[in-house]
Length: 365
Image (cartoon, rainbow, N blue to C red):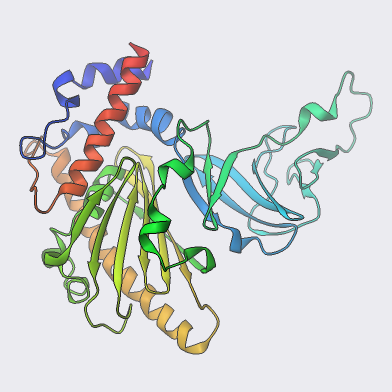
């Protein structure tokens, strides 16, 4: 079992959570070993809520969009006034129901033509006469767990241990009067990065690197004004915005929801980031952009400038994260230490990760 293999890699001392002033970072093997990647994929990602889209992408009945969640194709569709989520997999022989987002009255398998109603029940199966003991009710589409928070759609492949409302408790109140439920979907951007998913998360969770990696962003955010707050299931970095022509004035809220979701909330704008592992040293980062106004010419001009600036920052992060991955894979590094002033978010994330590892391994042992 993978849990037995992981037990051989991780010592009890590495799972202990010490105060940040005494703590070491997680060892490099957690970023580089295949067994760790498989353990996290099976136990962490399949049992946690993952952000897949927004209700604004489903404006009328029959609208649907697709998402690949750690190798599992899913389809989210609007059925009348209801939203449903299924595996994008026909129950006949595993064919796809759709290749891309669209609108339909019936879902039809692209392999052999079986059709399903929008509620997932089997409608017709061509050339199937003579099949004995065939019960259509047993061949409905397999549903996927999902829930909605402020218009954002979250899905989970297995039953999460914690309700999403509990995971995100307090965020809506903290950002008031901002109301992200009114924001409209604008664009999705994807980046494939040659680093372990935790390298990207670590990097996100501190402003320590801003002056050295992000000269443009440092003109908008001041690393000295960064304040980090931690909660049970998430952390928040926030900072007042400097005078700028990209975001406007106000505050920037950067939420990290364990294990791999980011909500970047700025005036009139929400950017969600989902960091998905592709292998032990490769990740996919999905950016979804939402704005309060996605139609007026002035707003669209500002949005496009925002997205260009976001790409500039992202390219800088990709560069440094890929270099860090090489450093972690080298013989020159194993563990480091935390700055209590600058890296409380990283420490909090790694403490949650250790607690998760301990809980799962205790269960299997």
